[in-house]
Image 1: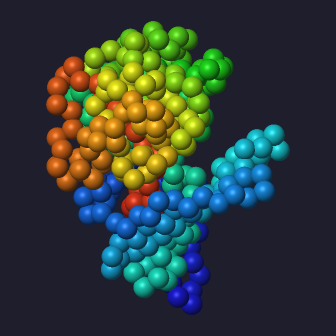
Image 2: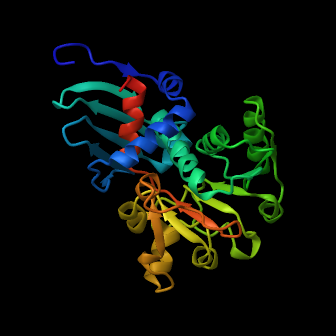
Image 3: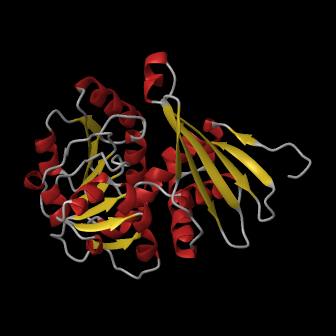
Length: 309
């Protein structure tokens, strides 16, 4: 694109260009192929943070996501998180700029759906969504793109938001309804996807039945928790990337820091699963837990798919 106008893909265009089934396939290929992905850079700004997430393929394209997090923006009527993605060709020339939030929503859900293909029981029928933020419905859509659920339950601390999220999913044709009680919903769930900013565990070992697959995407800092220590210790642990999850995921970092868990307890990452270095779920009664904090490899793969290769 040197010397020409660089295309910008709006949120609507990014969503339209990334069908979830095709995106799951693109991520599978990307994790098998691999890429250079440094740990994300985080810089403090006045009242917020700047995050930089680069990734590149040797002899191939490169890209970087620029995201800002300003927690007080909600009170000003502004998004808490804003993001752009810059895609470069193999010569380092700008190829496209994409809406970063839409890219993140799609690729996060697709990565979890990819993992669930290896870790959830094939006969899973009930999906439980824990959380009602912007990411939550995309987690449901992605899981439903690769598995035919007979029921989708939505739980959130605010009942009204759970009802609205379930209604949004129902309009998409999913069999969704709000769940008033988390423990009761867990007793039904085959797959649980949690996308919250909780700092206290919401998912307890005593409430999760054997055979459940847990997909935790919300606890993306060392201070956050979605599962209690007993559940983490009981489950077979898988991650998107070891480097990211073991540095940033509170569900792993906290029990490791207290000597309750060893890093070696992580059985495989997505690259291991996609390359068939690990088979994933080994038994019907096994509780599997996939912990995701996001990786620039997913952003790069999604951006390439969105612009056509």
